[in-house]
Amino acid sequence: MTLTQRSPWMDEDLDAFRDLARTFCEKELSPHTERWIENKQVDRELWHKAGEVGLLCLSIPEEYGGGGGTFAHETVLIEEQARAGDGGWGVALHNGIVAHYVLAYGTEEQKHAWLPKLASGEWVGAIAMTEPGTGSDLQNIKTRAIRDGDEYVVNGSKTFITNGGQCDFVIVVAKTDPTKGAEGTSLIIVESERAGFRRGRVLDKIGLKAQDTAELFFDDVRVPAANLLGSAEGQGFVQLMQQLPQERLIIGVTSVIAMELALRETLRYTKEREAFGRPVFSFQNTKFTLAEVATEARVARVFLDDCIAKHLRGELDIPTVAMLKWWTSDRAMKAIDECLQLFGGYGYMSEYPIARMFTDQRVQRIYGGTNEIMKEIISRTL
Ligand SMILES: Cc1cc2nc3c(=O)[nH]c(=O)nc-3n(C[C@H](O)[C@H](O)[C@H](O)COP(=O)(O)OP(=O)(O)OC[C@H]3O[C@@H](n4cnc5c(N)ncnc54)[C@H](O)[C@@H]3O)c2cc1C
Image 1 (cartoon, helix red, strand yellow):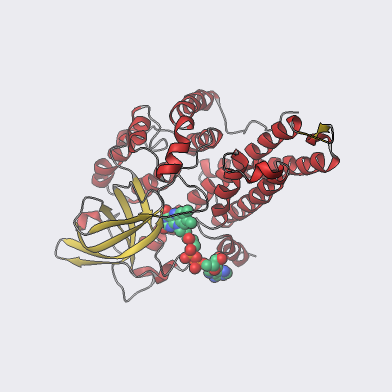
Image 2 (spheres, helix red, strand yellow):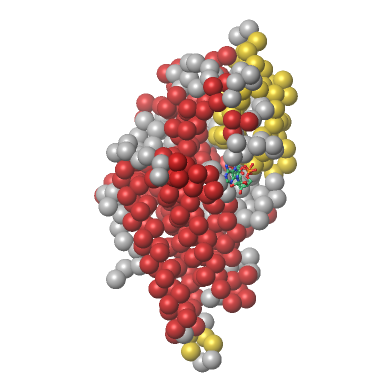
């Protein structure tokens, strides 16, 4: 029996792409991970290198500078990044989330102007929804983008923004009509070079330490009216609701691969490490624990594959992906915790991959909509 099974959506083209992604991640990510953790960010140059080999905007059509692939290509890259032991590079957000807002809602002019720069690595993308005062309750955001002639004036602040330290292109969730809730919300593009845009410090986190999660401030930032994403105000909330499933699917991918890698690492370690004159693996507790983790990883993979296949057909619904997001992120956390225990004290040492997996995985239950919000979404359909 192999530990992991081949996903039914894989094909020869994706096998070849996996080779490319693996080579890139082994060469360009693994050797630098420790330094990036120290620096709290990846090298800016990494984005250009990835753009050159065609790893940015993988699932964006070629006419906009993208790779012309599908979500399956994005999945393969996320998996290879995890295999290379990197949790810093915010490429899944750049490729799978930011670029897709532009593709789905941008006018032709916007798509031609913005996507090629995201695809080449000239621009790093971010999306800024969360504010210091509100995260889950997005209707309650305070950031405003008020129309003034042929410009919008943006005021407010955002926090916990992935790629915040390096971003050049930010999709800002703002109220264009502060008298309204969801219907007054729009998505406004702010380029980092605009006057009045300021980054706060890169935040200290318990995990994902090489990721430049940051605060962003907008003080009377003036952007052209053409920076409204799409052609009508008040569409922001609907746009968010339509795109969040792909974000949650990405969290499912990250969680399932983390479970599989934790299992692999722990099998390797427990078969080598000895206690009482025998391999740690030989104790019944170890074997049973890992049998359970292997089972849960398999079940999670089958559910994930089903969601990916549905998404590739355009049939993935919001409650199903909410199930995937909460369940895989929750089970992966438990599995990694069980695996870490089998490493003894070494499992608590930062240089061991299992320790890093433990701290990196924790946030998957929080962002992309908390797991409590996922259960709210599911329960509404019951
Ligand atoms: C590393 C990291 C990266 C992030 N990246 C981004 C990013 O790129 N862009 C971005 O916009 N945001 C980002 N976030 C923010 C993230 O999406 C929010 O932290 C998350 O949505 C929760 O919002 P909050 O922190 O304000 O918590 P709150 O909304 O204050 O929630 C606090 C607690 O209350 C619970 N709760 C809230 N409402 C309900 C309810 N109705 N029913 C039951 N329980 C409820 C929550 O589940 C949670 O347990 C990131 C966060 C982290 C930690």
